[in-house]
Image (cartoon, helix red, strand yellow):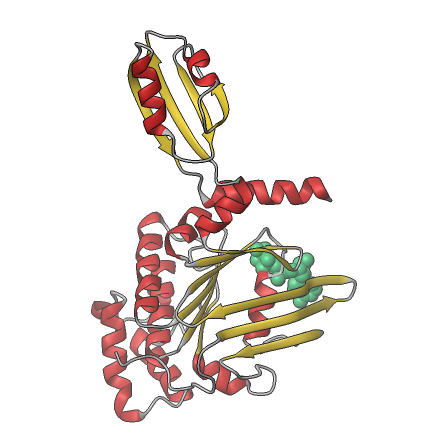
Length: 322
Ligand SMILES: Nc1ncnc2c1ncn2[C@@H]1O[C@H](COP(=O)(O)OP(=O)(O)OP(=O)(O)O)[C@@H](O)[C@H]1O
């Protein structure tokens, strides 16, 4: 597959940019003053509860919905004024990708390639290579009507490869996929990034998003609440907290932990076990203290908060503040 994309009206800076975006449906503000900049080559996750405006924003980026107010730029293009150019440069996978069921996978890809003006001499080579890459090489001549949901999603990725898009936008791509298909799809998303493409994805599958996204934005009621790398958000929302589980015998554990430096809160989970919330990884200090006081350490494990913890805490704070 060749290097992605030839549409490069601007060098440097964000490839997807939204400023002061508002979209109203009557009294409902689906998007309510949203600013976002996605840099070239990153996998960016849009996270937020149902109805927070993720799909609306994606449709605006694709030129499929008109914003009420605000500025939108996709590779320097205005999706409303240049919808065809945006369609050529951006691959879009909704949660259920639409293909012609009566046509084979190869015919569907050929149809898109012609529609998108892929150079004729390139079409068959790109289709063959894309089908192989997404693991559909053996079934390229089968009708898509018989494909599973996971196969359709992979065919959606093949379409991005055939169009050679610089940007792929995926709306809830892992919805309805079994664990193996989910893992495969995430692998393909990583490959898109490794090609140098930019990926914007919306998802509720936080633990999975965490494994694939370079940065995420938490969206609440049509606005971006927080943006950053998962680690940075963890620090900001959870105060960089580490959860350490310790189990020791031969000493009064609660007393031993009481004045240990770095312990934010220690909660006894049993007679010999405790869960410690700390601002840094203080496992060596815990081990040393227990041994010094004549105890025997039986377990010392650190649990790093996941994106689910960040998400839950953030939206809890938002609800409490409302
Ligand atoms: N065509 C429409 N007409 C009226 N209201 C709409 C329309 N599309 C979206 N909305 C409303 O706008 C808000 C945002 O919807 P949107 O689908 O963008 O959210 P979302 O974050 O993608 O949700 P989900 O996670 O459930 O897909 C919701 O209150 C929704 O009901």
